[in-house]
Image 1 (cartoon, helix red, strand yellow):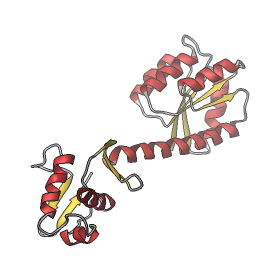
Image 2 (cartoon, rainbow, N blue to C red; image 1 turned 30 degrees about the vertical axis):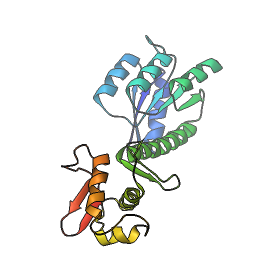
Image 3 (cartoon, helix red, strand yellow; image 1 turned 180 degrees about the vertical axis):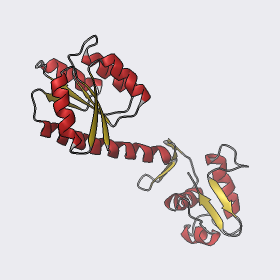
Length: 224
């Protein structure tokens, strides 16, 4: 179920929206008081916020600014204000959408689902980027660690690029030799030396590697 926090002092409108959205598996909790709403969001988790701008005791734009600064939750502004400046300011502050009143509840339902799809995909991308410690850019012949470019010799790059393409998979010494250019210094005796050189460049403590691991009797693997 989608959980929504609504901050709306028009109780009649709030009740209409709560009843309408409930048929789409959307649960809405409304607060007329923005201060109570800000307290509630610290105690519970919500998927999206619907925010009016004309509120008692605190302007909606101030509420929007505080929400954006403290939480990663998409915000739809629902307001009867006709001044274009309010819309511009709200979007500049970080609101995800601006829905001028009056509007059809069906439009709100569609916008909620559209924003959540977009927001969830964005979070998935961010999380994926955060988890990817090593990134291979074959076009630039570049390997980065947490966004910082690493300097490798040609032979080291060949080994590291193979490991990056097969993260978490065991790569045998034979596979490494097969992948290396005939003009590089890759030989059975030099693989261990090259691995140690790579570790010196990518590990915090090369003697106790956390990323480039040796799998006894089988080969090596690169883990994030």
